[in-house]
Length: 275
Image (cartoon, rainbow, N blue to C red; front, side, top):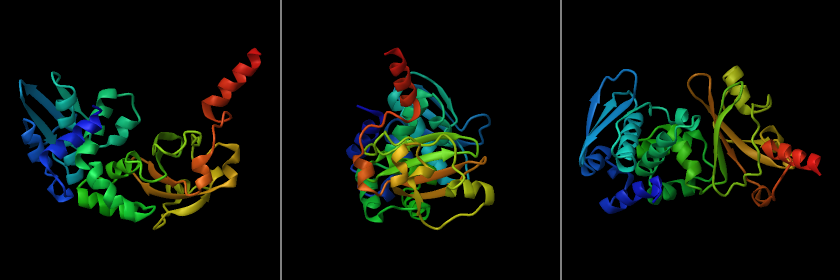
């Protein structure tokens, strides 16, 4: 089973059918993990186990969503990587997405599915259309998760044609696409000056809902200029911006392979030079 499947199986075994019943401390206790809160320094959570019992020590935070994600993350380590001790920086899953920390990403995935299982999350998302960050914020309140974790889950649940990305003014830090969004749409490695995300980082201006943008603002593909997408962005810490991109044109979802973008074009050029 994948990390996500294991987390959702635990929720199903407990018979939880309402987001308000996702008591993560009780879920951890049922799995043999006791939760303690302390003012940790140098890490956001620790996990120490022996036999069938463990103690997860969680850094106190002003954000209940961050505390809950930390618990889910440590429970993920317990379920997936038992036999090891961990000191984790899990308060911001953005850092794990931008790194090569494989075990940390697995624990993040477990936490995401545990706190926002598809059986409960998808029915909440479905009637929202193409939600902006205000609506996603309401969903995060329902599930008691952070805005960032909820937005990442929005992409992973694969119910909307969305790409979630994180940028600074200098570069793209990471991105996630819904499974049904074709990988041929190659995101730019740096923000275009015409993007709302660039406008937010340089002027602080925000918009209340997703707005139309030419596809070429966000994608390197030569045919991107033929399409429009929806963009919405939200400021993050450390000069970063979180971006939602919705592919609302059906032709974009049906577009075929494009060899002339990103790493592919260089591979194609090398192959041509060998002929």
